[in-house]
Length: 314
Ligand code: RIB
Ligand code: CA
Image (tube, rainbow, N blue to C red):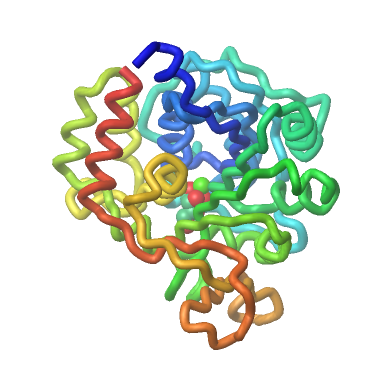
């Protein structure tokens, strides 16, 4: 096959809203080295740690990766609620464990993340995929302010929600629990959504043999290994929950997953259940599907794919 034919695979333009965050950092790095994804814009958001830190983390990550992508910071807080961070999982900096270089990449401060999303979608020759791997505040604000852009959005792929018990509240997962109102806006948007709830990130952990393998896969594999040593979402020995990487897997290797079209509703009224994602697999609520939900993942395939993706960064 001619080079043209090989290169003619359509690369997917992508905007990433992210709160790095160690698993975010891994997902962003792998996306940047994928031939099938064209990362047009990265919008740091407050979540795992505050906006200043998540922005700094994107800057120093891109500097280390030697990748030039526009960085436009977004919201420093949820729409209505007071957030709590996850520095206990990702460390004080939000990306503890590796000595990143001082950033040479600077964030754009002359526009908001929402304006940057709008401009990127408007100027893209093909419909854009929005990737949400943090709280959904900026994606919700974007859809609220620019509803006319919906026809130019291919889909939203997100990590969030829980089929059962949560990791933020009894029944809420972190990304949805930090900003339930934003999540509700996104699931009411009528845009095609594919989502990887937290159980998927727990089914497909990075197990010790994979961690050991990637350690010798170039400077990025080495960086991942150093971050893993500080990551508190699981452990080396029991396996590491790389939640956000599963959202990337939905884009690059959907065949690893069982996916079910389902109605998903986000609880925002409950005093104790705010952010709970009611993933109505049995149709109790009698509503049309508004999302395709990953309900299972082949853990072996995931670890093989993950290792191949890290090898691509060499
Ligand atoms: O619940 C896991 C999610 O919360 C991941 O996106 C992690 O980075 C944190 O943002
Ligand atoms: Ca995240």
